[in-house]
Length: 145
Image 1 (cartoon, rainbow, N blue to C red):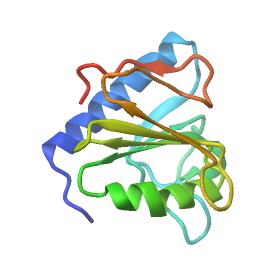
Image 2 (image 1 turned 120 degrees about the horizontal axis):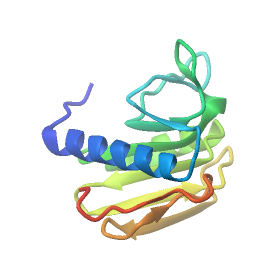
Image 3 (image 1 turned 60 degrees about the vertical axis):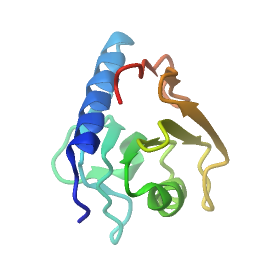
């Protein structure tokens, strides 16, 4: 397990709160969970920093219920942009964000396939982030990171 320091924890918490407020604002029944186990297959159980899902049960969150996944990267950027992006995409996670705390950008990925996400863009952390897979969901990031 990689150590998690205050900058990482605060960024994750602030983004979770902002996403939850934005979901409520658009009247969505989706919910944000923090560091929950997601069952992508019998042998793949990652724990992303944030997950937006409609799952309301016990046990791991089924991968098929995950709409958007977020990783906050301070020391794990290469791992998150490569290995995790391919894993989430291959398992059908519709949208994936990587918050790069060092470079102060958010890498947004969508259009999953078995080899990786077909679409991606990089946004400055002061720009609002609009989800591609959740209609109307926009998060203002000024002051979050």
